[in-house]
Length: 170
Image (cartoon, rainbow, N blue to C red):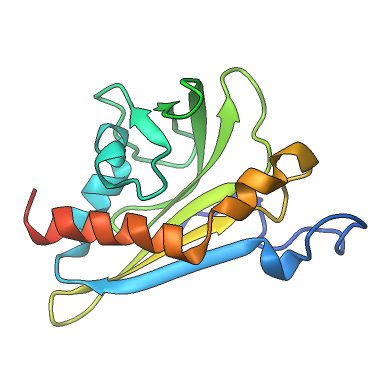
């Protein structure tokens, strides 16, 4: 069973003047991976492994031992470009199937953008992997350019790297 936070997929308000339309603020990519969902999920839920498959070249490192197990967990990552540490607040979680988090500077509230991973196991042993970046609740216009940088192609880059690790059993 999936556990979701009170963060809806769409904002409570219509598009704001000067803001990109909501339809442009949710990007996704998906593909079938020749590996079991449990293996793929293990790579996603262990923040120390995330820099290995990050197709956005955004994650430098994460302390080991931060395996995500529930909504409410918070894990930290060091970013490559800024060298800053981010806290990631887990807001959706279903073991082996779903994980989503809201990043925030350490000690601050999340800024309104969400990273989501959904896994759908198939009978043939493959897994449909869907990766979504949702910035419908991002209100800091100074961050819009960076948010736009996260395209479906960049998300697919993460899926492809994740698939490479999972399909090789690493």
